[in-house]
Amino acid sequence: MNKIITIGREFGSGGREFGRRLAEELGIEYYDKEIITAIAEKTSMSQEYVQEVLEGKPHTLYPITIGQSMLIQDNFYIQQEQSIYLAQSEIIRELAQKSSCVIVGRCADFILRDLKPYRIFVYADMDSRIKRCISRSTDLEKHLTEKEIKKQIIKIDKNRAKYYDYYTGNEWGDKSNYDLCINTTDLVIKDIVPAIAKML
Image 1: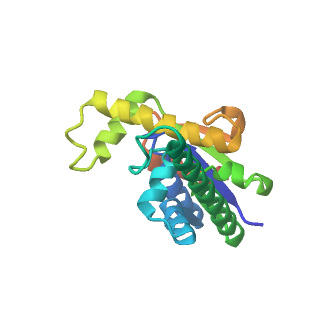
Image 2: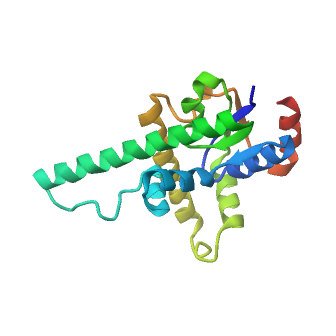
């Protein structure tokens, strides 16, 4: 039976790095952004559009109208969201059945619940998350103040929670939904991975 590990994470907690390093340490597959590419191929939608839907951002073509036209567009957008979620679910199940793997985000813990994945949630305090975001920021993001970074972190987490809660009926980040919660505050991710891998 395949070893399936799913990772939920607060933005800036180092969850993505943790998942990648854990997969390397265990010698198993790692899936994250590859899922978006696969969804785009399966649905014939652009990767940018799929990314926007998964991150809970309103699409740029979303209407600024009212009445019947708004209702039609609203229904269309909901249908698009549903088709993306269904494609995501199919892809995640295919990946999990193919081989042992680590899957980051995408409601994978819920989608694969019948396969009993090992569910991990990675979190950290706000100061630590801001420091991580600053250390890994791109040239375009370097002009942001700590206040602006904090605002961005809160917004991204709010969108993740909304998406997860809507599709799973569970509360994102609630410790009762996970097998292991890891506080990465002031920790170096690569230093904690070997111990977690050994435990798994």
